[in-house]
Amino acid sequence: MGNHATMAAMTTDNAAWVARDLAHVWHPCTQMKDHEQLPMIPIRRGEGVWLEDFEGGRYLDAVSSWWVNLFGHANARINAAVREQLERLEQVMLAGFTHEPVIRLSEALTALAPRGLTRCFYADNGSSAVEVAVKMSFHYWRNVGRPAKTRFITLSNSYHGETLGALAVGNVQLYKSIYQPLLMDVITVPSPDCFEREPGESWAGHCRRKFAHMEAALREHAHEAAAVIVEPLVQCAGSMRMYDPVYLELLREACDRHDVHLIADEIAVGFGRTGTMFACEQAHIRPDFMCLSKGLTSGYLPLSTVLTTEPVYEAFYDEYVKLNAFLHSHSFTGNPLACTAALATLDIFRTDDVLARNRALSAHLGRRSRELESHPHVAEVRQHGMIAAVEVVRDKVARQPYPWQERRGLKIYRHALGRGVLLRPIGDVVYFMPPYVITPEQIDLMIEVAREGIELATCD
Image 1: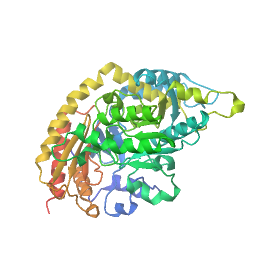
Image 2: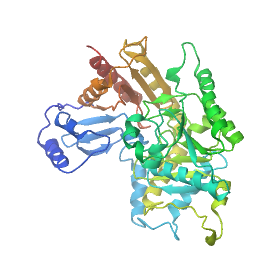
Image 3: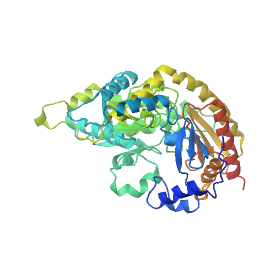
Image 4: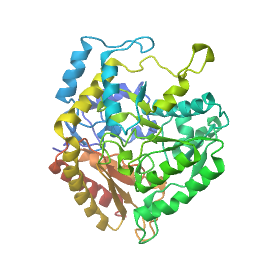
């Protein structure tokens, strides 16, 4: 099902749309000058794992359109639910009003989440959810008479979004360095990233050893720390680096002991991506705040939520004159159409035994992706559930990366598009995070195209 059009010379239909785009649209995460040499792909429609351009070229969406799509493009069941809701109510403010979809969604999420997460506060995207969690933790400590607890502890190589609060508690330098003067000061400890483990060291052993840094930071800063924020199991934008659940077990116990909140950013890893509905389940823990977005609506509409506990909720529940209410809002909070897409998403999980099917798919993905480990320029293939990543390096033995300026990953991206597969490496890390409706045969195509691209990008 490859794309037969060459990437170098798009014909009339695609080129016309690209010209109109480049006249006005400024794209995210893009150096726009690249498009002088790198053709943009205008997409006309989507179906299942496929995206189709205006000339019939098809691209297997191996990255779930930035990790949001769970059940394929133009999913009939989600389409029908949103269409039906559209005829009844498209939007109403959530201040002083409510509606059926947000009530039902809140009931469903609190039933699915780790026990004790009973309250849902809605926003419209992942960064906003992180902003809510950070502000809510800070404000909680103020309300309970501990105003000195204003700082946040974060992991190196972490990413939590690009609004200023979310950017501050992240640590991917590519995203953060330019805006440093605008950001609050945080406490950063080394990541438990298992790519950095010693030869022969287990993932769990490495994570236990690295936790000493977090323990020391909590011991030193507990008096001023509001919360620790982590991406459970996978640091996605941080080159898909992964770690063992034991780190989360240790972190939960230490946060309790030092009286510091734990914020779990499950925006990218929630809803089955790591093999369980939520990544935290693999450590049998409950965070104080759990941020959800992306797959929450199967990528249909922007929506996010922060789940938290009754004690946190009660700290804001007071007489108006106390001015203790939580201060955060936006116009589209809890939008009915987005909530309906989320409810349809959860219904598919409920009726189709998605996690069981994903176990078979992830086993196939793991088997096929591990075949790339034998390549002389692949240092590691790692996996958590439906996320697999291939670390492409210059020197396999020394694990020495290619100079970033050489943009080897871009060569892989371009080759894959020419073969009808959308891969978007993070630097030189090729990763696979496909929609759950992918077939084993489509996984085979995805891996084969990645193999070709890696060979092409490392042949000199």
